[in-house]
Image (tube, rainbow, N blue to C red; front, side, top):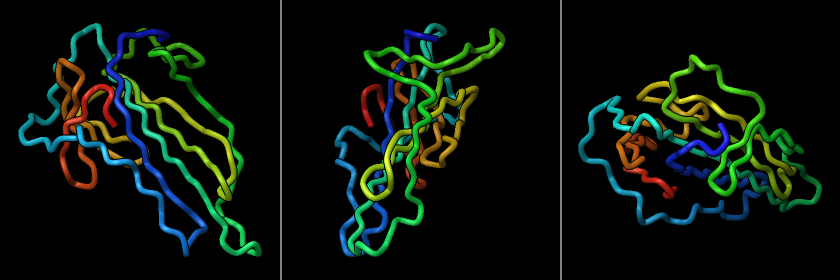
Length: 165
């Protein structure tokens, strides 16, 4: 699966913990995210030789304001299940030959600050549409020839194109 031709999409969730007196971090606004106005549920226009790769990470960053308190869910994690760099996806093992997939979703968590440290990630196969991300962050409803998908986030529908997040 290394170097498969893929449309790369992104998703990031930021959270703060153990910091009731500090504001939570806010994701950078992405002006390219556009409301999806019309689509056909389950539509798949992806070419046979192209796949989706959607990566969705939750970044936990904790700040302890009282030195006597600890973050209750702080943890050191180090279980990366794949790596993606220079437009190449690498992971241990092989996909079965009989798998019919539209793409893969990389789902992970990173901890920093008082939340602990490290990264944990894994891959899930997108074998049909609609497809709900395992962490509940979004649902993919349709995919188009150029790699754009219709995604539902908190009940609203958006177009997400390759390279956008």
